[in-house]
Each structure stands twice: as structure tokens, then as C-alpha cells.
Image (tube, rainbow, N blue to C red; front, side, top):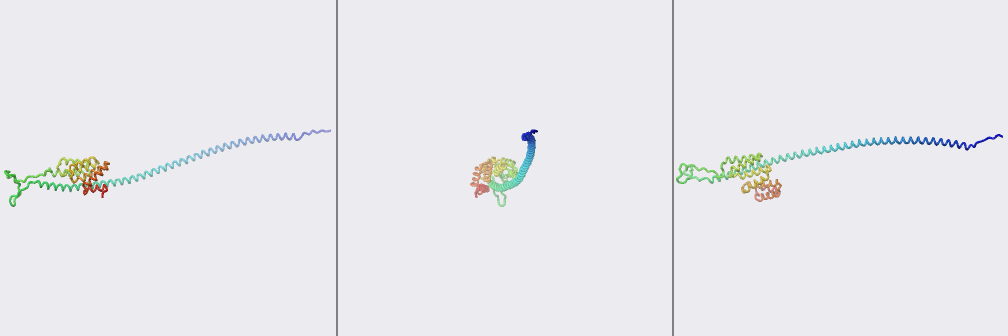
Length: 301
């Protein structure tokens, strides 16, 4: 009898299956490893790409910020330039106005000087007429000898007849040389009229020294004070005009001298003293030209 040995099929298939499974697992693991390696490489590439993009974006932003800053600087410079040009235009306009005002002030001062000189000339004519009348009053009376005879001077008995026939010379006591006196005074006025105030002061001081008894001494004293005011020596102007008021309180220049003192006080910042002096001008000389000016400055109608 023939015996056939048959191995169980299940055991062999199971072993083969195990081998196949192991092989599949091994291949799967290899594939997973390769897949993992592939994923890491892609990730690194993506990271590098992102870094490159970030760097490029940063450079773009830096460039843009630089452009904006340059534009801002340029705009600021343009604004500053426009402001400077505006200030230059305004400065030129103001300088023009200042020049116009200076010109008007110079013309006004010239007109005032001419007015003062004209008034002074009129006063001098009046003073000269009064001096002439006073000189005539001091002349020796003349006697008339017979009808149609010329005048002869009266003489005491015993005087030589030839000498008695000659009229006695008469010289006004207050005038030494009228021509030289007038010339000296006019020289000071010419300096003042021409704006040469230092020379005017010297000329009038010389006039007062040479002709101390002249009726024009108060006027010369006033012009000295006015010239000192013109050169901004306000304290000297005040002292000079006060001296005039002390020595010649009844002079026709007294009101102008007092007003000049008020102006000098104002220039020195003594506003209270200036106002008090102008009130004094109004009180003492209300109808004078100086009184009218003082009222205007005080706001009095």
C-alpha cells in the first residue's frame, strides 16, 4: 500500500505570507524613509525660498523708505525755501516802507527847520526895529539955529565952537558891530539849515561869546539846544534850554524851548516828566504854536 505524505498546506502558506509581509514592510519602511528625506529637502527649499523672498521684500521696503525720506527732505527744503523767499519779499516791502518813512521824516524835519528859520528871521526884524527905536531914544537932542539952519549939538558954555558944530556920535550900548553880529548869527543858522548841527552849536556858542549883550542871544541859545537834540544829545539839549528859560524867561523862544525839553524827556524815556512839561507849556503859553503842539500831543482839544 502506497502512503502519500502530504504536508499541511496552511503552514507553508503562512510562512510564505510572513516572508512576503516582511518584504512588504521592509519596502514600505524604505519608501517612508525616502519620503521623509524628500519632505525635508522640500521644506529646506521652501524655507530658503521664503528667506529669499523676505530679504527681497526687506530690500524693497528699505528702498521705498529711502525714497520717502528723500521726498520728505526735498519737500522740507522746498518749504523752507518758499518761507525764505516769502520773508525776503516781506523784508523788502518793509525796507521800502522804512525808506519812505525816513524820507518823509527828513522832509518834515527840513520843513520844520525852514519854518523855524523863517520865524526866527521875522523875530530878528522885530528885535532889530525895537533896538533901533531904543538907540534913537538914547541920542542927544539937537537944537535948531535960526530959520532954515541945520541942526547943531547943544554944548555947555566954554566948549570950542568948532567941536560944538559936529554932531555927537551915538552907539547903541548893546551892539558893538551890527554887521559882524548879524553875520555871525546867520552863519549858525546856515549850519543848522544845512543839517550841520555840530557846526551850528559851535557857531552859536561863538556868537554868544562875542556878542553877549545882543538881543539875539536867546535865539542863539535856543538853536544850540535844538541842534543838540538833533544829534540826540538829549541831556545837553535839556540843560541848554533850561538855561535859556532861567536867563531869558520872557523871550519869544521860551515856549519853543520848553516844548523841546518835553521832547527830549520823552526820548530819554521820562514820559511822566515829558507830560508834565507839556502841561506846563499849555498852561504858560496856550496861544503859542508850542502850546498848540503840546495840546495835540496831550490829546487836548
